[in-house]
Length: 337
Image (tube, rainbow, N blue to C red; front, side):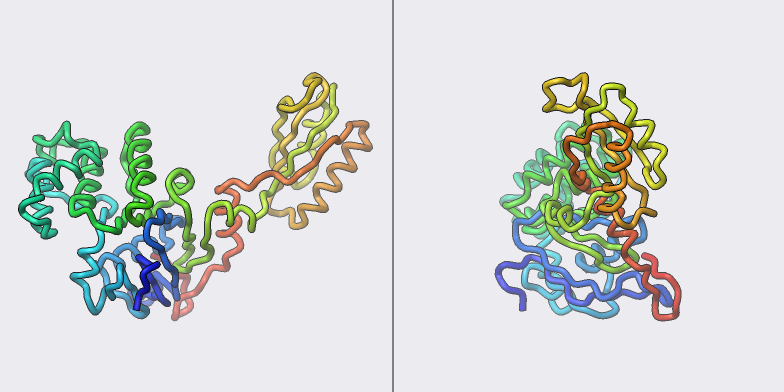
């Protein structure tokens, strides 16, 4: 049974569609108050997990518990614990926004006495009050997405499950939704499915990485960065003639070279900072950096400092996906979702 420190518990979850395996032996836990990103490329299995969590799809095997309720044994109680915003959420186009949200509040058994207040609060949070009297069919895709978010919020559930919550929004709306998600952390649990790295970086405290139906990595963003090395190095060079860029670009295995004044240099005309990225064909990064330094010194360029570059989330994600061996389904075909 689920303990008090878990909002979601997934144990050995698998899902097959005929000969295709969409999910394979996936296990993870989410604690109350966490904002967790479910990250992976298209076809990784993110939507399958979302649909099983929310009761729209049954698992082939495994166990899923939401807020203490098994989704198979107590489906109604599990659904009442969460608000779900699917990607491309189906809405009733002929209804007005406030009318639709009031209908959804009734369907979700929001008490009659607090129903109107719940709708008003959800509209404020999703920033759709200005279109409350418009028919949904006349709204832009971005506004329809925000109505779907208000729908997920209207019953004030302890868990929000959001599938691609910023899809179709303009940059200003994306910032608003991300700020809302960050603000919800602590007061409730949020599981965000996305393939957009910046979405995870700006909203989530922890990430679950899916690839071809398997959970291939999980942890805090800083924790994952520490485990995965960047494929680059940052050098502080004494190179007044600026010869290093051309020299470094000619080295086999170097994919990019960026030169800028060193921020801590007293004599910016002499010292520069050079960021070097290596391609994935370079296996031994330490040896590559040593050879690079030796070459620079032999060319009369002073090397004052050299350090590994801090791994970006893109570096981490790319390395995880490349290092994850593609699984096979039960009939020998590659898994898809």
